[in-house]
Length: 327
Ligand code: COA
Image (cartoon, rainbow, N blue to C red; front, side, top):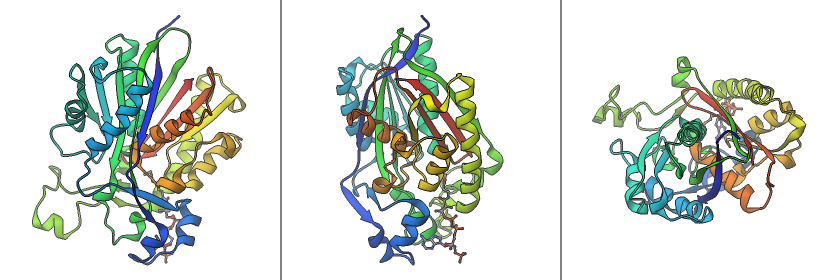
């Protein structure tokens, strides 16, 4: 039987500080009703002042690696999917490697914004299938709160912080990742972006004054592309694998907006009981949202061996991606 990569452990970490919609209503011109109705978000988690992305990665990693029955030194590769890393250089993955004591692992980051975890999963899958990696830790982690303009009601109500991790190992029993699909349309790069601090707009007093170090989003335009694109993506992914929507045990979507999640579920004719939803508690944690949701689903015992699970995401780039797993 052909070698596949199997998720053998999951873990997640959410910072303890909670910001509710009512808290936000005291900071910007918004209401709990508006945010709930338009997004499905009730509250979100925010990292502490001294808490860096890599700190959250390590907490999620401890749980995933322990669930897989491994030790940090067993890992041969660490991939961190993030757009809010500790610093531009070195990679957050290198810092995680050190803090976690994964002394035998090569480590690097991937940035595909909210699709980052699935881009990472696709890359990880190739390393495992080719035999180049045998014990791989993939983490999706974001500290969005530190890059948000807390005066911009169009974005500050949406995002949250968190980390999720999975361990991947080879398997030859027919279970594991069946397919991954990756797509990008860079012509819409400015729909969601953080324009300051890179080589296009190096940090300066001017970039600070103009607020270029904050996440910018053309929300309504992004929303429309996301709904259209994701509906097509999930149908195409299942068709490619000759699987009917009714055969799906769970859909684990990126958590950007409950209306987008519901539209995708409706297109698949899937009851919401078979869709992982935690956006109410955490908001949009970008590349962390899918591994956090997956960890919650696994720990709640909602997945059984051989279940078909579909993962999908959409985000800055614009990027979108899916993964189909036989659990
Ligand atoms: N509270 C109250 N009013 C708000 C608000 C807030 N937090 N944010 C925006 N508004 C206002 C707007 O100013 C606008 O007012 P106007 O009609 O007077 O101009 C009105 O609400 C409608 O804004 P709009 O942006 O059209 O709302 P929307 O229904 O598109 O919902 C989002 C906004 C951001 C929730 C939604 O567009 C969204 O989720 N976008 C996609 C996010 C996404 O998928 N990202 C990709 C993955 S990261």
